[in-house]
Image (cartoon, rainbow, N blue to C red; front, side):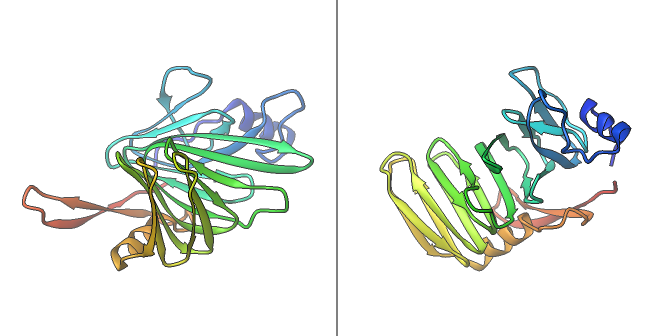
Length: 233
């Protein structure tokens, strides 16, 4: 969908015959790239104004992504881990490299993300942050959402840990379970409902080659229906 814009990084890579990650010494370290953009997706770098994001843009540590109504962004990290940023979400990506190990952090300020994270190498980590929680990933899939009163983590495969920043309590969340970290400091782990697992699996599909995604819509009477949005590259 739309026209792909060549960033200075991707243009440099094409000229030199290098992969997009091969950045010259002295330039900022890339963390991820925008693999897919659907409808209203914006990016902000170094505190600058929000601009329309385009497929293929490289994200540097500290860059922010924001999605609008019925919109979606797919972020692909250097290790092929994938994060799908659902509608009305806002997050910041960050990363640092130390002794050859590259650790990544995704700070979700609001909204929902689906994820499929590759198994991390020794001394590497992938973390989800919010004002309420820290969720550590080794190699797993699921959905992480930030709501007004709690963070909700649904795990479809693998194992995760989530710590509440207020109380310091940590819960382990295996596949098929949902973890809840509340703003009052309390935590909970329970078996996921079938609907939660379905939503998480739909949100965390590991491949970005599918050409549709689904939204659950609710009317004023509380009735729900699914909206299927199809798109083309």
